[in-house]
Every structure is written in C-alpha cells, then in structure tokens.
Length: 153
Image (cartoon, rainbow, N blue to C red):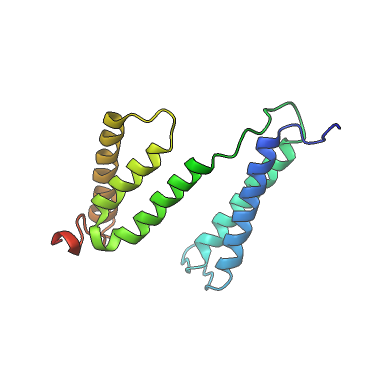
C-alpha cells in the first residue's frame, strides 16, 4: 500500500511540534498577555507556542514531498533517561543548587547516547555548570545559588 507521507520522520516531528505549540498557547491563555513593549506572563508561551506550531505545520507539509527515511524503533530507554535527568534537575535545583543539578542532568542525558564517553561528558558537564552559573546567577541575577542549602549554600 502506497503512502502519501514520503517523509515519516518529518511528519511525526511536525505533529509533535504542533501539539506542544498548541499546548503552550492553551496554557498561555490563562495569563495576562500584555504587549510587545510590556510583556505579560502569557506573552512568551503564546508567541513561542504559535511559532512552534507554525514550524510544525511547515514540517508536516514538507513531509508530503520528496523522499525521506523510514521510521526506526522508538528509543524508549534513551527517552526515559533524558526525561529522568530533566525531572531530577527540577527536583534537585532548589536543594542541591545549580552546579550539582546541571552536572547530573548532563551526565544522565549523555548516558542515553550510544557514543557516551565518560571523560568528554564530565568536561561537558563541568563546562555547562560553569556556564549556567555565570549566565543565570551572575549575569541575570536569578535567585539560583551555585550550591544550595544541602551543601551550605
């Protein structure tokens, strides 16, 4: 049976983009929108969700033209590791601080790759932690301590 979807990877990624974009727009409706000069809390998720939805629609339309790769197996283990890393980051960031949380996030997420190498992952994790502290705590002044109350921060 012939399929009119020539690029299934692009089609399904477009579907995900549209779904996440619509969810962001829907959630953003509960907050005041504001203006471009004086943005409200609903401005960012609504605009970003709209852009994500548009990108998804373009991806879906492109999936009908040309030839693309077939879908491979769904990477359940890898997806679970990355999701676990993100959830762990959210749980630990207040108590352990930004440094520990970012290092664990990078280490766990990198372990999901088939090309995982311990030495380069440690270097990446340390670099990402330093970068995040410099940007979020120092430059932007967000109340995210490098080391949280669990470590006397």
